[in-house]
Image 1 (tube, one colour):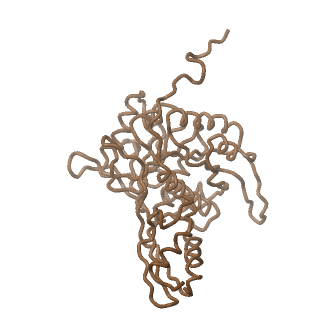
Image 2 (cartoon, rainbow, N blue to C red):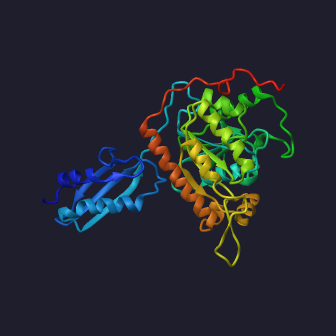
Image 3 (cartoon, rainbow, N blue to C red):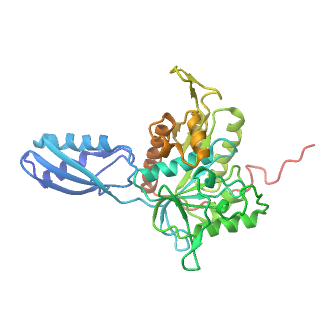
Length: 372
C-alpha cells in the first residue's frame, strides 16, 4: 500500500491512546498529515492536555503504524492541546475553569498542602494554565509555601485579581489577614460564604486546572463544594501509618456519599533514603496508600519519599518542583501530576454521572448511636 494522506490516516486508526484506550483518530487528535515523499511524512497531533505522560510512547506508536507504508522518516509534532472539561452548568461559579481538582485528606499533618502546591506547580511547568485556591480557612498554608504576602486588589470594583507566583494564580484567606498568626474564628456559614466568594468573585480567567487545597476532615467546606460546584474529582493524600489511614478512609467515604469522584491517591512520606545508601527505610510502615486506593477504587498515583529539601524549600517559599526539579521527591511529584492529568482526561471523556443525593444517614442508622 502506497504512502499517502489517506493511507496514513487509515493506519493511524490502530494507534491507541493509553489513558482512554481509544484510537487517536476516534479522539480527533490527528490535526494534520503531510506526506513529503514516498518515505517521509509529518503528523501533527492535538493533545488533550499539555501535561501528557505518554508523549514518547505515542510518538513511537505513530512511527510503528506508518512503517508498513514505507515511511522511514516520521516527524510527529505535539505542540497544540485542547483540554477536556468537566460538566459546567449555567450557574457554575467558575465557568472559565476547565477542571477543578480537590486535594483532600481526612487527617491533618499528612502533607496535603505540600502535595497540592507542588502538583499545581508541576502542572503549570508542563505548560498548563493553573490556579491554586487555599480552601483551608482555619489554617491557610499557601502564602508561606509560595512566599507570597501581598493583598488582592480589584481592577473593576467587582472581582479580585488573584496574586501570582511562578505563573500560578493564587488566592488564600491568608492574603487578607493583617497578621499571619491571627486566628480565624468563624462558624460554618461564614466559611462557606468565603469559599464561594473565592470561587466566583476572583477573576481566575481561563484555566486548565484549578486546584483546591481543602481542609482536613469531612466538614462544611467539602459539603459545600459538593452541593455548589461540579468538580472534576479529588486526589486523596495519606501517609502509610494506621493512625492516618483511619481518618483518610472516612474522607474517601464522604466523597463517595456526596458524589465526588476519586481520581487517585498519593502516599506522602512513604520512605526515607539516607545519605550514602540506597536502602528504603519505611519509617511509617508500608502499604497504607495502596489500602486507601483499593478502598477508593482508584489508582495509587505515586509514593513521595521523605526528603529534607521538601521541608526546607517549602518553608523558604519555593516548592521543591521549582527549586530542585531533579531531586527524588520532585521527580515523583512531577510524575504524579502527569498521571493525574491523564486520569482527568479519561474521566472527562468517560462522561460524568448526574449529581447524587447526599446520604446523611451515616449508613443504616438514621441517628447517632447512644451509649448505654
